[in-house]
Length: 100
Length: 484
Image 1 (cartoon, rainbow over the protein chains, first blue to last red):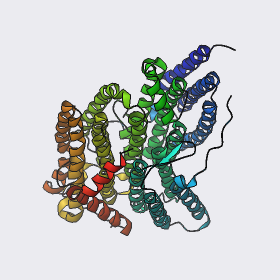
Image 2 (image 1 turned 120 degrees about the vertical axis):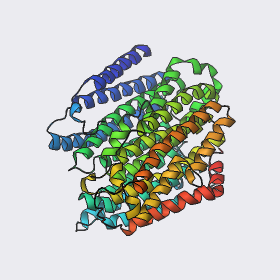
Image 3 (image 1 turned 135 degrees about the horizontal axis):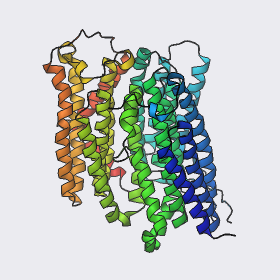
Image 4 (image 1 turned 135 degrees about the vertical axis):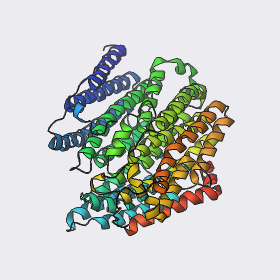
């Protein structure tokens, strides 16, 4: 079994890649995929700690996170479709009607 | 690995949540199976549902009862907040039918969604396990994403929904990562167990895992309550979302964010007060100042109220920074008064609105005071209260928050708060100047008020003045609510 640090470093890297992706990408779907990656990095952290601490709470938490992420995906994609129908684009640069 | 012990089931503790969820599900079915295009009756059914739930909530006032292995608690703190949520949901429902008829997006799902969001907020206030707080927060957020984008035909509403969704999910990521790191550092997701662990091992306060975890949690909650510098989504979402939804979002979920924030930050970590004080001080000053300064230059009334709501989150953060019982009670009282005065102001915005929200600018209010004197007077009361002028609820709330800060030794914070309050007078009074001192530019055609919106205005004006003139009872209740 690997030491817990390895898992934590891996999940921190994944989380950072996700965050950078959200901040730099322009396509709403890709941004959403980056957010999913952040959530999965969190899941990895929970699992690693759960194993390390011998405490099952973390694994229970992961199930909830996965369920919520699925619900969020359903709502988010529906919102993107609604936006695409009106603007024929899902580029976040086009989400700009209300700028100052 | 331990086995999971079956916790004692005490459904009475979560009875209000169960009731409201069932009512919302029944309303969803009623919406599908009852034919007809006029869905206003669903609003009245929702009001009945909210009233029943409120009765069940009030019933729980008294000594705190913990249930489900310490995951949920029924205490006066949660009860007070639940009443705030139910009030803001009820007022938002009352102004919905008029708006939805005007915008021709009369879908019945609006009402169940507001009720589900309310269940989420109630769980946030009652949760004493980070898992429950997270689930409540997500139940609230997912409903709000849909509600913000509810008017599918309007591009602005689409944009509001999409923007809120992307930034909301992003902030959830931070909150969750913070929870995961805190869990790793302390070995539990339960707030009480975390608190006990930190008490027993003071060295954990310098553990980077723990510190980063708490900072990430604070970031996540700051997003949710729209505190600067995490407020960027607020103006666009508030402006684009349907007005009743904006009214709801500005009052209920903000209070829910503060409920969970207070529960996690102050009551779980009393020993870290000094460290939090510094951080919250900066957050409060930034939030008040950014909100007020940008609000000065807004022409769109909804956008102006959005920035003003950022500023109001800042005032509440002043009470938060004080980290004493007065500050916490001040937040409770302020959030309740804010629900009345802000939703009331939005109700007037709905009433004077035209299809497509084409006349949402302050210039469109020119001469309004002469054509509709009663409505203008009502809007003025709400604006005076938002600005914090006696004898309104806003004044008492601010007075209480700032005096809590002074008691804790944050004199400068209170001074900056008062100065901010004075600056905010400019943009609130500007609306009144247009209403009373300018000549009307065009004919004002009046679609008339519905009984529901009239009731909302009556309740809001009554509560704004009552809480300002005789705040004693509610203040006493708020003080009782923060005694753990």
